[in-house]
Structure formats: C-alpha cells, structure tokens
Length: 390
Image (tube, rainbow, N blue to C red):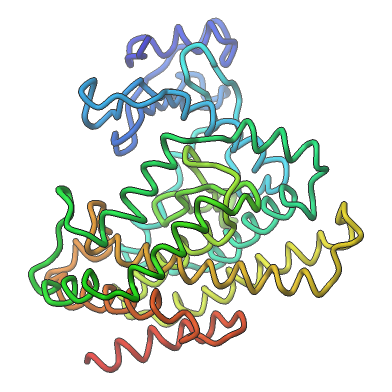
C-alpha cells in the first residue's frame, strides 16, 4: 500500500517510531523521481522529527506505467545500516524498516542542504570531499577481501544483488549517452563534440572496459549513485555536518564507481564556478579514502595480502575512478540526466562543451593524469582546460 500524507502519523505510531500521543504536521519532500519521502514534524518539540521514505512499485515520477521493484527501499536501508556500522559520522540514522510496505523511517535531514544546491548557490566544499572519501574508504575496506571474513562477504554479495538498478546504470550512465538514444539531449553548442565522441572507436573500446569493470568487479559494497545530489551538508551545534543519502543503487561492485561519480560532480561544480578550491578537494577525497584503507590494513583478514597488493589495488581503483568519472561527465551533458550546475547557467553551452571535452579526453586516455594515482594531475587538467577556453 502506497502511503499518503494523511496516514503518516498513524503509520509512525503503529510502527512504534513515535509516542502513541504524537501529533504534528507532514510534508512531502524530495524530487519525487523514484520514491516518496515525507517529513513528520511533531507538535511537541521534545519529540524529534523523522522522515519516512517509501518505494512504490513504479518510478514515482512516471507512475504505474513505469513499474519498478519496490525492493530498492530495502536495499537502501540495508546499505545505510552497513554504512552506519563503518562510517557513522557521515550516515543518517535508520530508525525502522518496514519490509511489508517497502518503507523505512530515518532521522530528519531537512535542516541540511543538498550539496549540489549549496554549490550552485556559491558555497565552498570545506571538508565535504574528505568526509565522502573517508566514508567510501571505511565502507569499502570493511566489505572487501581485505576487511571482511569470506563468509560474511559472501552473504553481503548475495543480499546486495540489485539487477534492476544495475540495468538502469548500464543504460543511462554506461550506454545511452554514447549512442543515439530516445531520451538523450544536449545543448546545440555540443553538436559537433557529441558526434565526434560517438564516432570515436577509442571511446567505444574504453567504454566497453568501464562497462566490464562495472559488471565484473565485486570489490566491495558501493553506494552506486554517489553524486553531489546524494550528499547533504550543513551545520548542527555550530559544527559542519555531512550525510550521504540515497544508496538505493547499492551493490557489491567496483570501488572506483563511487569515487568516480563524486569526483566528476566536483569537476562539474568547479567548471560552473571556476573555483580552484573545488578542484583541490579532489585530492582531499582521494587522500581520505586511502587513509581509511591504510588505517584498516593492519587488521586485514588475509595475511597473504601484502603491501605490494595494496599498492596495486589502489592503483586499480584510481584507474577505475578516472573511467567512471569520464562517463559521468559525458552523461551529465549528453545523456538523459543533466546537472543543474550547468543547466542553471545563463548560457550552459561553453561550460557544457568543456565538460564533454574533459570526459572524452579522460575516457580515451586515463594516463593523461599519470600512470600512478595523482588527483592533483586531474585538477591540473581541468584548470588548464578552462584556461585554454578563456
């Protein structure tokens, strides 16, 4: 049964999430693309407000004509609980999971702001990229062959199988933007660049490699859709707060997927604002990720994994990071789902063309940023590219 606003208080009381006498207001929030999200604010200020998220058996934006398994809500709740186990500071608190109605109740984050919105309004990243890198590092180490007991990992892989949403990723991130497809669209200024991209044999080869990595690498539990719209930022009690949300695409997959999606969206924000501090935060994200792996390394479950393997694994993750960043850059200007960072500019053409060019270059030549992990080289590539276009 799909919940409606008038039912939320009775639902919360019935689930034991709020006191039986609780009353208050309910508002529906969120972009409404996939799911329904309600915030319940009690009349009694002593009772914390909560959010209820439910996955209907269809894509919320399109309705019953676009069916989709509501299991995604349970996958998301399980992922958030795993994230909270290893990275509690960056993860919202789950209060209740309703497996019958494919819904869960969590802490209210409405006092925070979506990172993309904050950046579009001119905010600085501060420590956000380091916080995101730390979360990715802690979660992926703990769920990798280095950090997880083999039996625990096998169970995690089994319960994290997410075929429908993996299919969405293959189509809308790793497929359609690189061919003529019904829902693709791009700014007229990109017409020649898009044609070159789609006609380049090297693009097809490297895209195939990224698709293969997505399908074949069961390295660790990943968020699966970790862009700047999946991060909430703000302050509580005078301290900065970062929360990573919406892991309904979570799966055991390539670690570079999360890093690449996040890095690409930082690049897009930097291109919008020409803010070199945004680019510097790419290194902060990578360094925090590596620090989390090195912190966990002495506790690795397999003593036959030596330091040489760790270095090789981190190089492999960086290579994948660049590949997934490249396809995300292309997707955001030539696919179906564009970035508001660019779309809200008075003239999105020049910035979008730069993003497309960066994605093309990075995809066909990941060595352009060096043969070893060097996020500062990636930042340099972006800054020199926009200087060349001035």
